[in-house]
Image (cartoon, rainbow, N blue to C red):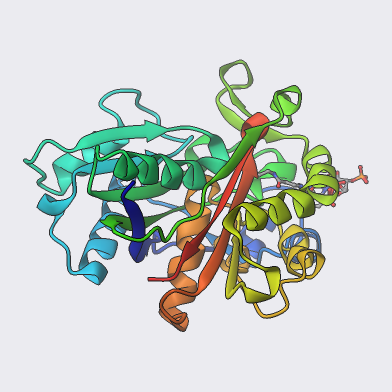
Length: 314
Ligand SMILES: CC(C)(COP(=O)(O)OP(=O)(O)OC[C@H]1O[C@@H](n2cnc3c(N)ncnc32)[C@H](O)[C@@H]1OP(=O)(O)O)[C@@H](O)C(=O)NCCC(=O)NCCS
C-alpha cells in the first residue's frame, strides 16, 4: 500500500480578537474564572463574510503556499466541520470552487464534531493508501459563533472560530500511524448542537471532563502502541484544544517527557474540528520541529467520538 506524508500545515484566524473582558459585559462571568477553569485568555470571532467555507479556503491557501503546491495538483478535499449552516453544496466543494480547481477533485465534508480532524486525516490517508487519491487537502474549519448561545455562560466563553489545514501526499513510506478511532454512543448527549435546542452548542462539561480524566490517558497510550512510538520519543502533542486542564496533565500522565505541548486554547479558544491543525500550524510557525519528528494528534467531542494518530513532522 502507498503511504501518506504530511507536506505542510496551514491555518487562518479571523482578525477580531475577543478577550475575556468582552464576555464579562455579556454574561455573568469573569476573566479569573475562565482562565482558572479553562485556560482561555482570548478567542477569535469571525465577521459576517467569514463563513466556514471562506475560512477553510484561506487555511487551504496558506497550506498550499507553504507546501509550494498548486491547487490543481490536489485530487481530494475533505472538510471536517460541525458548524456549516448549509447542507449543499458542501464546504469541500465550495473550497474547490474558490481555489479554482477544475480537475474534478473528490470533495467531502465529515462531521464528527470536535474529533473531526483526526478522522478526516485517516480518511484521506486511507484514500491515498487505496490509490483513490494522491494529494489531499484536509481541513478543519468552524464558525462556532454561529451556533453559540450568548446567554449561556457555561458555553459562550468556550467557543470560537478558525480553520486549519494539512496537505497530505502519497509517499513510498508511511508517515502516519494507523488511526485509533471510536465512539461512546451512550454519551451522545454530552456535547450537542441540536435543532430542538435552537441549533446551539450545549454540553455537559463535567461529564466530558470526567471522561477525559478516566479514559483519555489510556486511549492516548493505545494510540502510541498502535503507532509503535514510545511516549518519551514524542516531539509534540496536539490535543483538541478544549481545556488547558485536560491538555497539560496528559503529557505527564502518558510519560511524554520530551514533547512540546500545544496550548493554543489560551489564545484561540475551542474551535472544535479546527483546533488541532490550527494549534499545530501556529506551533510550527513559532518554531519548526525536525522533519520526521513524531507528533501525537488526539481529539474527542460530540458523539462522544474520538480519534488520534501519530504523524511525522513535515
Ligand atoms: C466546561 C468546563 C470548562 C466547566 O468547568 P468546570 O470546572 O467543570 O465547571 P462546572 O461546570 O463544574 O461549574 C462550576 C461552577 O462555575 C459556574 N460557571 C459555569 N460557567 C461559568 C462562567 N463562564 N463564569 C463563571 N462561572 C461559571 C457554574 O455555574 C458552577 O457554579 P455552581 O458550583 O454554583 O453550580 C469543563 O467542565 C470542561 O472543560 N469540560 C470538558 C469540555 C470538553 O472537553 N468538551 C468536549 C469537546 S468540545
